[in-house]
Length: 167
Image (cartoon, rainbow, N blue to C red; front, side, top):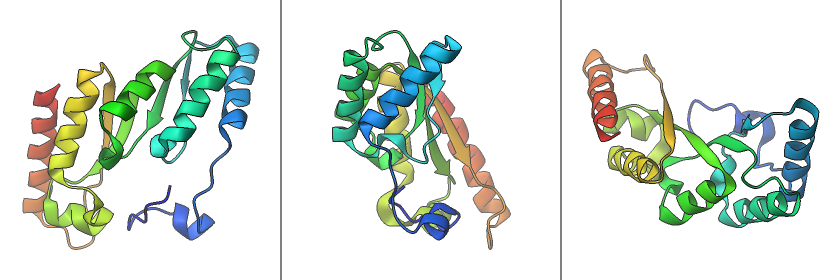
């Protein structure tokens, strides 16, 4: 993942973004489908849908491997990367479930955790957009961050309730 969230170990471990090529991703999907006769794969990258070009290449590779439409996927995406174009690509690929880190329902705490590249409003819009495309949305939150107050934790609870109402 190219982002530097305060809680994430990826930057500390790897120092830079590392991704397999689209061809390698398709080869691994084909292997799993052929070996295990599965029709659902959850792609456990830190952030699979970070690059539209790569997602398009995966779709084309799946089409060439005659896998497009035969397997569905779940993947992780970041709320600031969700828009109609990305959702159309993910739906074409066969994605049915997206997971994203909401982390907090308090703007101050969210800024501490993820920086200024996301906002509570982005989280709400991301859920609306994903629901428009029929995706199941999973989210992660972090409670009990250093310096987090009970009031901030309650903000997160209220935010989660609001997100559920959007679905």
